[in-house]
Image (cartoon, helix red, strand yellow):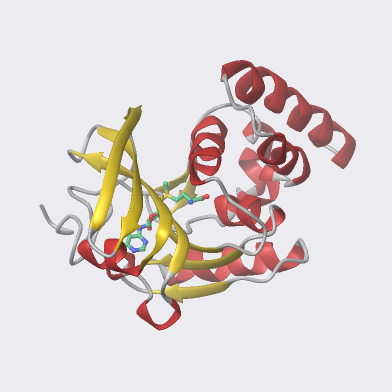
Length: 218
Ligand code: SAM
């Protein structure tokens, strides 16, 4: 497939899977029109890049389905120059969407191979990102506080470190629940220890493995 065909499929994804399912924010829709999802998966599966489904990215991990990435992005209410911490950078696609919207993105990924490829692909689009290899359940204290935090793996509970590293007035979007099904949850931080929670919908993510997440061997 050539660039023109991917562009056509990208437009179709935005209208058929995002706009028609309630993603309204024009800045979010524009980002999905501009960021090429196909470069974030291996060449052999690029033809499936604009299906509304997760795809394998290696290490037993996935790039999330476009609708969920769009929903999480919309729920974050990203503004240009927001400092956004993304836990579970994986392929780098969600980070590229946030960068396209003008956010400064700090990514944490536990697999070095995925983190390296994500950085390379993001740079190839002309964006820059800071990526740390490690346990994102502990956040990234050195650069805290963050205006927004997005967690793209399933947490058993809200990680305390992330609550602490969220700025007052900030938002955390995170799937919380069991290893096999979760509620996509928005946490709004009002003051130092004051939070409000809202469950948005059911979802299924790969587990968030780490000190304040799931045990790797459980
Ligand atoms: N946002 C990604 C994208 O756009 O491709 C989706 C990533 S995938 C659904 C979830 C990612 O979370 C995986 O790459 C996995 O390795 C990572 N992960 C799981 N636990 C983690 C942790 N404690 N810290 C950092 N990354 C973690």
